[in-house]
Amino acid sequence: MFRLGISNGQQRLLVRRSVGARSFSATPSPREILDAASLPGRLLPRYRESSTSSLLSLQWPEPPRNILIIPKLHNPIVTTSAISFANHIHSEYPNLNLVFERRIASTIHESLPFPIYTSDTSQFPDKIDLVATLGGDGTILRAASLFSHHASVPPILSFSMGTLGFLGEWKFEEYKRAWREVYMSGSRVAVSDLQGPHTQAANLDRLEEDKVQLHRNWEGVHGKSMGLTRSSKILLRHRLKVGVYDAAGVSLNERLMPTSIADPQQLAPRISPGLGGGRGQQDFITSQPLHAVNELVIHRGPNTHLAIIDVYVNNHFLTEAVADGILISTPTGSTAYSLSAGGSIMHPLVKTLLITPICARSLSFRPLGLPLNTKVTLKLSEKNRGRELEVSIDGKRKAGVSIGMEIRVEGETVGRTPEGGWAGGVPSVIRSPLKGTGERDGIAEDDDGWVGGLIGLLKFNYPFGDGP
Image (cartoon, rainbow, N blue to C red; front, top):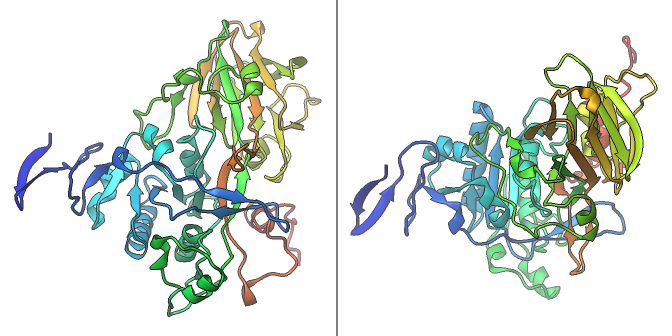
């Protein structure tokens, strides 16, 4: 247990070096793990539309404070990089609270000369202002799954350090520039890409001329100017809303088993009555939905026989699917499992959801693209003869479903709220194109990373043979 000690006349709890141990102290010392429940509440950013881009501009009302860092698991190189990143932003930017998942915190806290925070992941949605991931697409999905019960997700700054990294926007070598852009976004402080050997104070005289009031936590940040009005670009990635129901119509979302290896004991959070969304959602998904960034999958699992699933679209019977399984994907998920199953590639800004069969018995069962607000219901046919099928949401939550149960899926609405803000989606910080000699003329800012990923990572339409 905790050991009680005396230091400088004050009693302090010393944390033991074990998974899940935390220390609570009025005067934090280096290498402590503190409780994230003590942190201030989450800061909500604003997103502004642009007449020249389909992306949104990130606008912080004040500097973000609570930063969740999620590195790829079981990778010493990524862990070392996460420590370097944490040391940099703690030393260069004031008043930051760095938060980690419990297993990560217990592993790295001895390597950091300042206190860090952790807690049950159920605390994160109310505390985290910004998420930084270091890893591949799976790490980004892991981060998004921490907010799968919530309509609002903090901005996610992703560094590509995984196997493929189609969703990862930034190279880790750019972490100083990337962090500075997202931290300063909306401050109207002159921001630097930190490429040069020297830095200089922000141009406060120019700010006074523009009559901009600068938050005190931004005043001390230094760097070369990259323009007073420049801000980070945000892509709001659409999600699916998913509800799993038994034969009596009772929601089973609370019972879906988490599969995150970051915290094997994590349970689906308790859902209180009345937390659902708007009137349309209550008609179809009658409890707080789970959200998926990539896809929902229902498949035969270890069974040797094909799954038999009745598919309904807006309460109209579409087909009886006889296949290994069915995928319902977002545009973001169209380059994941759906692509391997023969589905189409969709741009992430397209408002659609895709139904893709997995090894269908009939060759005429082709992938379908439907409007985002389509309500899709998957019901297990009695022809399955009692066999249980498996349901997986982004590979992070799973459940076994049997005859009489159904899965309801619809796209999450992304748009403005009555208060003028934005709701829905996963805000992904997009890598901004380089200026000057690094800029590539003729490529729209919206498409730069996505097109580059198709060509460089997926080898889209790569020619056979030697070629030119």
